[in-house]
Image (cartoon, rainbow, N blue to C red):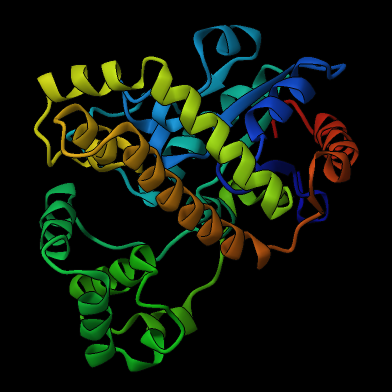
Length: 315
């Protein structure tokens, strides 16, 4: 397939609790051609983290085949480079079976990994784990200040709360000895398998999104989420990366009696709304093929997948 016929890779993204799973399942299940979903949610990579990450249920996975779920244990780390490599290895098999891959989730940095790639750096997982262990000793403002000292140009473009990108910039400097802003000027984006990454942003209006966030959190807390956290804590240390995922520390506090159910819910809602706002801000910068609530994007999404179907099969 030549440059003039870049294979489309359709991605449905948006803030947490926005309804991506429901829309993706419906669209995939009722397409006139086979579709398989590739997860784009960093939290759903953890085995054992089910309810609190909104991971597709066994019944939902039986309806439509899913990929890149349950990749690591809660005491492990995963980065966007590893994610890209995983998808890179997965796509040829999906295409060879005449199936349309459909990327769904809310991890903006992972989406960028698919669309642009990274500087190829010589580093081992042990090196990265050591660096990230260092970063965890500092709060966001302290990390940003450290970045400002070594790369003021890059720091000026990032908010101190944008911890993911601040840490990545510090990693680049630690591994190369060169500022991230300097490396960025030399960088040439390379989409995964040369695809045309076609993004659709599902973004309900704020009031509706907040209602969905509250309803979901209440349902989970009244259900099996506390028992899920008890089982995880019985097996993994409290500082395991997976147990620091949004909502899990708050439920741990509830289990230990440090907060009431009402206070636990309040804290989860505050943290989730903040996270959703960060996602919304990130995806607002996307050159999306369609954006808005389900009614605004569903038809475009189905059309994009149909176009992608014409490109299935080996390259």
